[in-house]
Image (tube, rainbow, N blue to C red; front, side):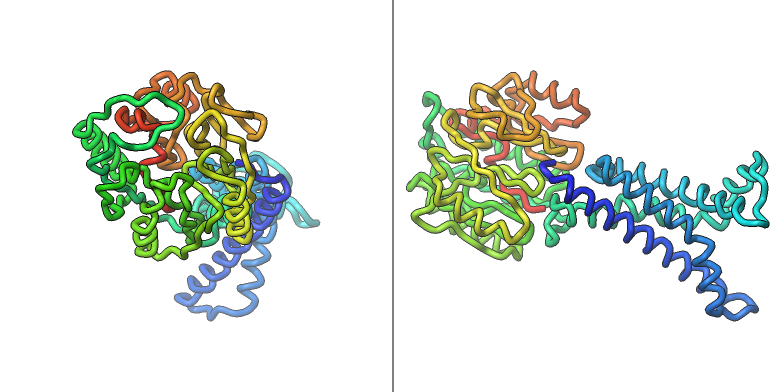
Length: 409
């Protein structure tokens, strides 16, 4: 992700402290409640004793989780889970071992002592280990992403994709950088159905924007709005013919409960020119998006914690025709279509023009066009699962897999 080390350090500190404190407090509550069923009434001394017992363990949990955050363990849920299990096991073991061997009455360090300490993972320390292991990849990762800036504080775990059925005059859609080819409308409808089905099968709720049967490019719904957490920015398309597409999208976004902002004339901005990578928003300055549109977007999203970076686009219709990003923040693109690859912190070239576009379905799964088999193989070799869809008829109109939906997460 395009995130400063300062933010990562702060996020690591905050998450390590909060998770360790919550686990520590949970132990006190658990032992206090457990004592209610005994003959000995719970007292303040019990709270102090439990707190003292887990104090060193919580310190070690804090240290281990801080290190995990710094090295990027919170970037994916499964690495956060591994970090949580490691911290949940090591912190109680080390904390109990140090407590047992310290002081004048401490036990001598021996294999027997080590065995006894590990045995506490099935006794006194079991609940603590489970608390850390569960909290880290769930609440801890959620909090980390908020503080670091890779997730809006308004973001939920919902996954909604807005889609729009192709217009009957789809073949009349605008093209700028390629030669016009005949479009098979019947095949396009089948491909659109398969695209929507792929999103649904991946766990996304698909919501149809009201059809616009006379607007040829309306199927490319992504161009009409950009979503930032609970805020939707309604675009002002650079092509006059497409401006009638935005009211339908706005109505669908309002129905999802999002707050609406908009780009106003003389600014123009197409959603296909906006690539979000963590808290960085790359915006293509090209034929459809102008400088004033970028300026307005910067003013709208800066209060939300995003940084807008303008990128020249002269070789493709939109920025996301040339580049998109993998779940880990690596920007991928077809170099002949990219004006300046040095703009991006991490850039990976793909071998085919249609292989530039990915829709992130989850932390380990992306959607790509089947017309770019070499690029698919490259992404799969990076450890991602790739869902392939055939969108050949939309590619004849400079469309790609990102253009056909607006993702709300």
